[in-house]
Image (cartoon, rainbow, N blue to C red; front, side, top):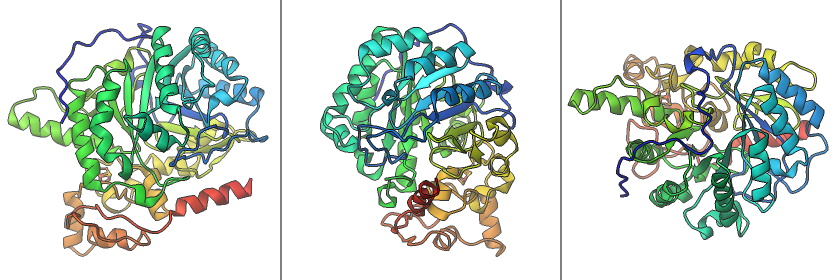
Length: 442
Ligand code: SF4
């Protein structure tokens, strides 16, 4: 197991000296903390888990430059959310620099997640930095070229990605690495931690698979395996010179709080428990920051390349389209968004959970696996006492029965606990079917 000695936290490349707006000032009922725009579906990679089901050519129906600028103006009326250009590969758009410059001039904090291809040159990174890009985020999914390139489907992607990080460092641009944890990459986690430790990044975002797009149910790790990764993330966050967060796994916040409560009882921790104290120093220094309790549709908003507004890219249920509806009103008033922000609307053990306000489970994974975005997230080991009492009183089903009745093909896996939820379905994802249906309608 890798151990990292605690190191002093020094100013990062790209530090603006200005903090993000106080997180307590961001009312998620009114404004998202993070808005992601899928600039294009076009991408030269062929990743095995691709959410966007990317393809090489641009879609003629993607938002135009003028439409994108209009979107950014409306997003600015939320306040100063982080506005991230994603894809596909945003570098496939010829107006990329113009859009980043426009958003920065409006006062948005601009992020970019290009694909690891030769399209993003050191010159382009320097130009993006000069027009106001706040942070560059890249995906690294394996500790070696063979593993990463195998995951991304194109030879050379590993080297291009490391080259992008190096070029960003050289111009003082803050960086982030996104890593997908799936069943096939679980054993690479320690080697990945060693790799990212030497890259000078601000944030390591560990993404836990959601079976949408090309991702398959059988690629999901078990809840127990995910919990062990959480434990390592927490341990690592005490010693590495960057922040570590989970994506599509808000139950990491639950695990942090449980761990900190235990540490206080044992006397090894004096501060009050807080999920954000487990690594939120470096993410603030470039003005990007992090927020407490972000979840799909709750502090988070996704706009597709055609302008459809979703609670997240992994929860592709359209509330409307920015071409004929106001994105601000959709976020604040649409019934789906409002229900996703109400922890009391959650079902199953998530609905009975004492952590539902700070966690709530991945709404995207709940939908992908059960067809209902308010259902319980099956990738969590925690069984709330309140839920167990409901089971004892005959008011709720035992956890395994609950998921078996809602997820086709739910079956017992070796090592699953009787109280945990480490069982996985084996049938194809309904999310893939739904995504195809959405695409077919447009
Ligand atoms: S049961 Fe649901 S709300 Fe509770 S910690 Fe697990 S995923 Fe989060």
